[in-house]
Amino acid sequence: MQLVVMRDRHRPARQVDVCEAAARAVVSLLDDPRAAEGGPWFPAVKHWNDNRIRKLVRRADGKRWEDVQLLDGVTVGQDAPEPDGEFGPAVVRAFVPAPVRPLPKALDKLQVSGTHFPDVGTSASADAVVTIEINPGIEITTGKAAAQCGHAAQIAREEMDADALRRWREDGFRVRVITGDRDSWRRNGRPVSITDAGFTELDGPTETTRAYW
Image (cartoon, rainbow, N blue to C red; front, side):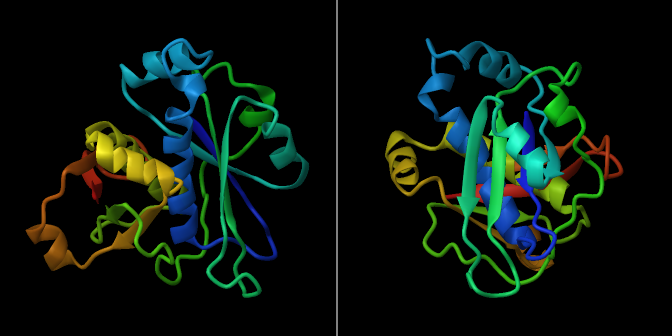
């Protein structure tokens, strides 16, 4: 699954907001009627979900951002905590899963590596149904963190009961992303735990995120 983050060079989004918007975009696509059995996206989603659920996060601005809106997917926007402040909204589009090659030209020209957004402040998503924790003992780019939060949100949707899913859906799939302290991370297990295979930024299999509700 490809995800693209809108980049505003003058008022960039905060990393925490990008991670939350990415998680929401992933779940919104998977929960879309077009991804359900009988829908046009179902075969692609099922094939991907039955294998390794890889996600790649790219960035785009200007016309390149406009171009990718024409491809099948779901866009989620999340306002900045201070609309008139230094940071802008986080906007992420998740695309219907497809092979890595060949990619549509509009996606293929977008960069994957080095996707960094300002890692400042804490989540403004109070009372969200789902909380996603990022491992405090690792250092990863915004793109990697967003992908891992997307993984955690996806598995949370699969594991939660129908009532929790209904409440989450009614809340627009909002999540709260936090980075806990190391002691809390060591002590507390969660219903969802995501381990990255370690093919890119991490040196070997590493637990990256957890989710609970």
